[in-house]
Image (cartoon, rainbow, N blue to C red):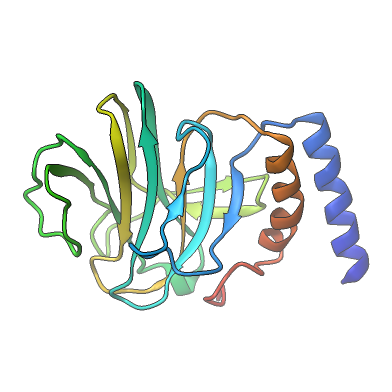
Length: 207
């Protein structure tokens, strides 16, 4: 196992050096991304990130936030690893910002004054789900809903993820589509990607 892990890390180093921008920057949730302690996007929201998070309970709501100071392309996706134990997890998300219209759907959180939301739904339980293989993380994922739109209203924006069918478990919040790696991002990838290869980020056994 140690030899396999070392070989995997070496392979990852080669990949990062040869192709420094071929994947999302991987983050792993260590503390619940609540309204009090959200995941804060410190760099551009356009830069690609894959946050390996989880719904601790069936009613857990995770919060991500970013600031808009100029027109930016906001890309968001909800993915679930294609494990039998996660086949019933169908996360929704909402892009929340100033000036957006009020949604028709009932939300599991309160909107700030002057804010609206665009709700992006997943498939319904029992519907067929396509899958795809992502080589950098060495995982197969269920295809998930996507949001891709330019936003220009200045202010603090939010992305909320939740499980409307009250099924908890691990999911991946994808934010941004621009492949841009800083030195810190490369180090983060070197640390987190081997964990993801060996399912060490999962709270739900993949079975």
